[in-house]
Length: 247
Image: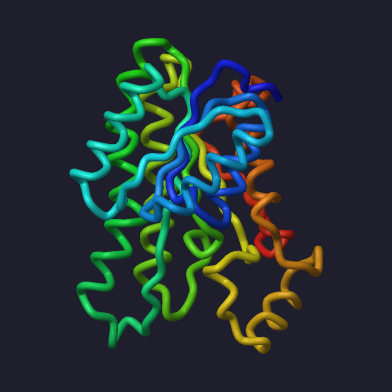
């Protein structure tokens, strides 16, 4: 699954799933534009890529800020000339029961998890259309498929990503651009590190593979969908959840 000669941009690339995706794509030969808020962590990712013989550059941005998205992606396009692969991974949680959820927490999660993906797609789609090749991969969630109490905002944002994926796939398919989503289940990341032992054990009981996933499990799926081997797959949601949700 070589990505030699391709340029990939990953949001939320400073840690967790985003970092794993950036490193995996770089190992497959892609040049990486890594984006997130933390410049220091991004520089560490770029150094790790360079130490392994790859190429990359960091672009600090907050995906909750439209102006920062436009500025950072404009800079990436100026530096690399194009973006072939876009991984919309950045996301946050602001969990609360719906009767107590503040409007600000609803807006923050929808803006960061869903609106940012739409804005990033807008910024790179011209480049993809011009060259008649592109891969857009949105990182959604199992909870965008089955819901979860206390996560009305998060589940809605991730379900919205699935709808966005299918709409974009239909819009740009004729130009040899694919758009797919990956729906991770419980993955060992900073976002899940705060889970209580009770909740962790409850989750494991519902996972046929009897383990939590790793960021690398998700990154491998991303690398496949970004490759030529996945050229006839579009508008799909690839579940990476250990069997927690089937069908």
